[in-house]
Length: 201
View 1 (tube, rainbow, N blue to C red):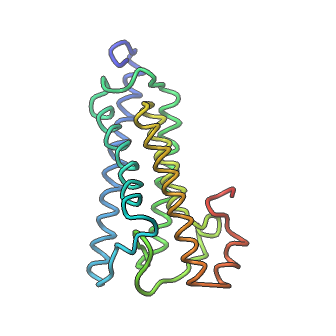
View 2: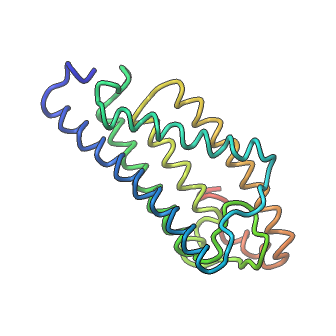
């Protein structure tokens, strides 16, 4: 579709692609910084997988695949699918932006307690800041980001990945919340009364 686009559309596609690349790079670098920081503090970034290990890896894989595919469209706009819509792509970029901000805010607030999986050492229940509005802001942010990627690069492969990733990450959320309930008891019960699982529910 790129070859038949006018100059304004081509410019929009270029800006959208640039933002997609920047978000991906910054996100990967940020995760790397978390890993390095935890390593320096003798903290393990990887916790215990809350669900079946294969499904846990599949959840992460199906989140990553849409990013990788969309990067082809960002670098080579002629790879964008025929269903590409400039307006929908901008909606996608906005969703990615909001999701990115939410994810970063959640990780920053967790600080040294950040774990990818269930904690195996000392942990703390964070109930302030962004966690006042969402018990799982990182997953909320991931959902917004991956849906935004699909809006930018509407393809059936991405649609399948989005559905699988959201379903599996929801199962991860439920398993992690069950762990938190056992770990923090009444403190967790009180927290659930004032903060939604994601945002509206």
